[in-house]
Each structure stands twice: as structure tokens, then as C-alpha cells.
Amino acid sequence: MIDIAVKSRDEKISISITDYGKGFSHEDLQKSKQQFYRGDKSRNSPNHFGIGLYIADQVAKQHQGNLSLSNCTHHPGAEVEISIPIN
Image (cartoon, rainbow, N blue to C red; front, side, top):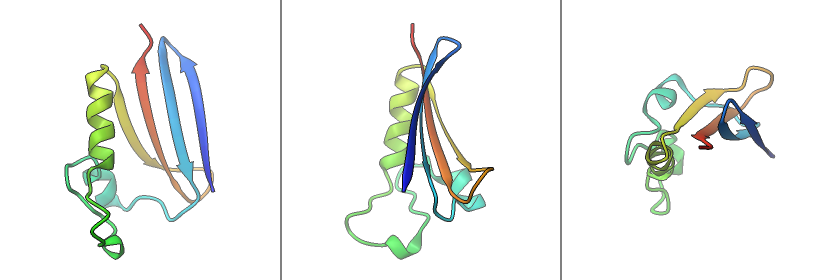
């Protein structure tokens, strides 16, 4: 299961996607936005390129926004949030 939330605050729009999995490891939090980084070695299939979060981060930057990665504080899982100015 995943939760998706959209918020408008302080002249920014934020979209957050939260899951209920194991969350990010410390290494994943540091490296997941790097091009071709694949943290979960069990997902070592030819269909996983390690570019999804890299591309999302680049899109956010092109729009003067940012992409943040974190582990949930209220339940197990990970959260990815993209924030972009509305102006």
C-alpha cells in the first residue's frame, strides 16, 4: 500500500509518496539520487536501471524545486517528496 498526498503551502506545491515497507537504509538516503545507484541488490534485474529518483531529482531542480527522501516517523516505510514553487 502507498499513500499519495498533494499540498500547497508557502507558494509551493508538494507531492509526497509514502510506502509501508522497510524504508531507506542510511546508504540509500545518501546515494539514491545518484545516477545508476541501485541500493537493493535483490532487485538486480535488467529492468531496474537506478535512474528513477535521479530523473525525479533533475526534474525538480529544473523547476527550482527539490526532491527529498526520508524514512517515516509514524510507521515503517519510506517517503519521497517533491516540492516545486507555484509562481
